[in-house]
Length: 626
Figure 1 (cartoon, rainbow, N blue to C red):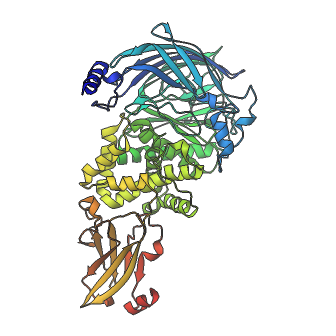
Figure 2 (figure 1 turned 45 degrees about the vertical axis):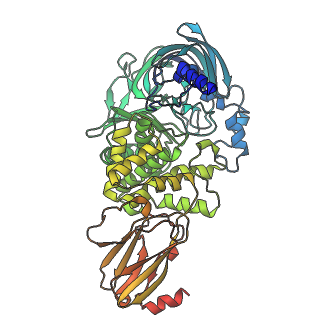
Figure 3 (figure 1 turned 90 degrees about the vertical axis):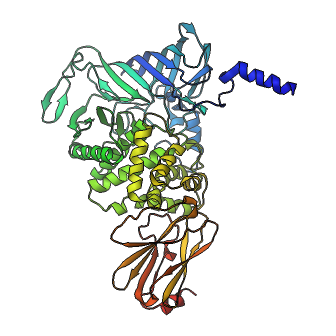
């Protein structure tokens, strides 16, 4: 008893500084304000600069340490990225063993030359791509502090995403290029080593001045606020805007408000085009003067405008004034208010990578869930949206928009590589498992959810989720709760099965029997993933009926989606029951076919047993199923 009293007293005295998980609202958000002044020497590829970072501790915790990301350090022989790439079974072909072969003047690094907190020297140590800082003065809850840093970097030869002189000849793709404060939230610090892929960041403002050789054109996050001073004039030749020549080095000043990162690119051969999205942002296009790509880029611009219109009307309005689509020369990667993408290739490929990376502006750029922990809620949602946009852009059937994602998921299962998608994006055993989980399974997650809750409710939910949680780093449970409120259904069972397990969906039509003028269809759940069932009966006269079988876990059912087809609501199917018999109040001789989920939105791993054709008579069907 005396021990309990002492423990209670300790809790009261120490408070949230040492008990961060107890009785506190976890919806606080840290905030950063960056002011950076950097110089890029295009002869040595060295960046030198200063960074003033105002950090707001809006948590209930006292912070004695902070952590920065030093991403360039990954591009050194022996780094975790290098070792992982050389040992994983299916390395990224763009990386493989390339990092291990970099010379001293080709590697990337970030050196911290000085770091002060509120004018006092801070102790720090570098661990790979993470900088750990021990503070001379702890940051109290609700307080702010100012970090002043001097740093020096070397821009690596571009291996992946960031770097210089890539295969398309882009001079500089400056992404993950500055010491970046790690995010701290109710889960603690997200100071992950940079091993392969996703990122996370703190909401804040950026004021970035970049001094560089005057022959270079720059593009990036935010708005260029000193275009007149650097001679970035507005003399137009067709739709092309060219910068007027200048003497000496020029300083470009970009400002971005309420974003989680800052990226830029530089090349002396960039063309700059603009296009206005009606009731939306101004789009900027930066690409090289290259006869192989100019026609595709010019043509792509109108597709980008339509893509932004579709995204804003379908999922929520884009909140910034501008967006830049930049030839970065290495795949595609999303950043706030801009993307860096490959410039060459087919027109369809160019539109595809543009639409995907731009759609990230909604899920990584505005909602900004932790894509390191939940890549599927970023990459998958982005793929889902961009696939539907591309169906409209290329006038292909919307019903086929996600077929590729379903096939990728089915193929992963056949190869025996599936893993739960609840893990950190860097920790999958194979790149195949990661990419399929993040992209394809995230997409299938949404398309199946459309099947479960109904199409109208689904899109209402997607817009409500975006508008409710933008700029707030939502968690997966925040998403599913919105969809529950819109649909009136219980849906956490679905997310739990799909995200936390590798259970699979497999339903079949087991028997079809006729008795007393009625037809009885027995369905069997062969897989261990329960779902509600749309059972569609097509009669010989061409009419159809949908027999809707809700799952008991949903505590309700979806509204009718197709008003032209009569729907019959049946009793719920308890998830523990392996079979279910539905009664059709027609003779079997009236029926042509019976099919489970003809929309094929349910990711049933064996569709061959989902339908029966009894148009030639019930006996024929019985004979083929013995």
